[in-house]
Length: 256
Image (cartoon, rainbow, N blue to C red; front, side, top):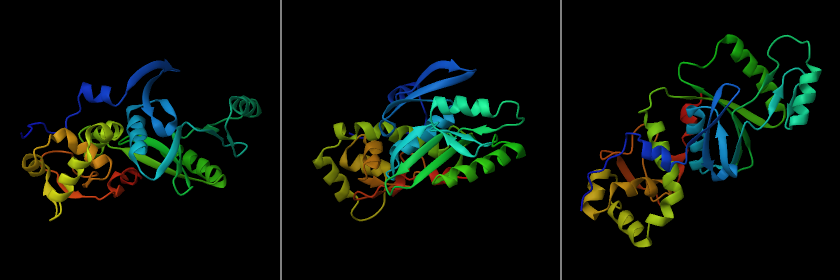
C-alpha cells in the first residue's frame, strides 16, 4: 500500500527521536543535550546550529570520533589547554593583560584517515565582525601548529534548508536502520533501481514500501541522493548506492 507520508517539515516528534533535550543554562547560555555515539554518548552543545553540526558528524562516514569544545587556545602563550588546571594556570598568567586572549572551538574530529579537524560553528548572518575574524586567524596559527586543520562552518538560517531537514532525518535513521531493513527489502530496492535513477514516490508505490524507510536506506548506503540540495520528499531522485556513503559527507557544504 502506498504511503501518503512525505518528509520535509520538522516536528516535535522528530526532535524527540533525535534524542534532543534542553539542559540547564550555563553562564547565560542555553545548553542542548543530544546523543552521539562517535562522541562516546551524551554530549552538550550551546546552540541549535551546533546540534545540527554534531549530527552531521554522526552520519559522516569519514569521521571516526569527535568531541565538543575539545580544548582552549591560549593566544598569549600560543598553546592548547586541555585540562581545567591548565586553563586556571593560563588565566593567572594572563592576569592584567587586555583584549580577548582565549578561543575555544566548537568541535574537534578524528577522521578515519587519521587527520584531525577543528570546527567553528556560526549561523548565517552572524559570522562575526572583523575583530572576531582576526582572533580566529590568530587561533588558527596555534591550532595548526598542533596538527589540526581549522574550518568555519556556517549553518543556514532557513530551518527548511535541505541540509538541516535531511540531517535531522538521517541521524536517527542511522541508529534504527538495522531494525527496519531486511536483506529481502534491500534486494528489492536494489533490483528496482538497476535501470537508473527513480523518484521516491515511484519506488515506494511500485514495491509497496513506506516512505519512512527512505532515510534508513539512505543512511546505510542502499540508496543515494543529493542530500545537500534536495529534501527527502516524494519528488527526490534516488539511485542505488551499493554501499557508497559519499552522499552523507555534508559538512563541506557549510564551510565558508
